[in-house]
Image 1 (cartoon, rainbow, N blue to C red):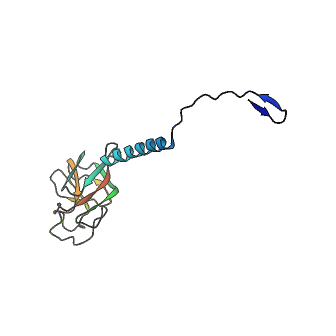
Image 2 (cartoon, helix red, strand yellow):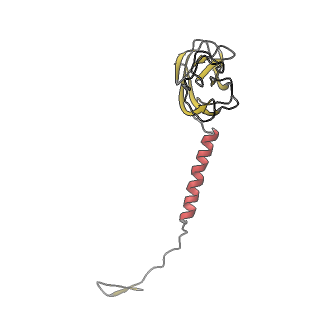
Length: 165
């Protein structure tokens, strides 16, 4: 019981219903687990956007899973990521610059570590940060790093591949 000050009458206090309470630690642990789960799923590529391909620096060619038709409009755009053809540096889809005549390049005359593409076993072409034109042949599209010495390469680039109009 408590007393109402203005009128000095007694007011009966109702007992509160017991409510379960989550501790701050439990709430933080749940938020951290949910956030970590999202990060892990993203990094493993399980929920990647449609048309997005992760191109690894330590592979000569990455199969995009995209089949193209000769003359069909094809667009390839760099989204994010860095890779390196040697320890200590990191580059985007344009590559390191360097000597484009180096025998370590898959494609002569193009920046070392640049993003390049090919259709089936055809001649490679420079992609860089943005490539838009009709496909030069029909077949599977492959993307890779302009480098032939892959053993010390690290990193990846993510690109989006769009077909048609």
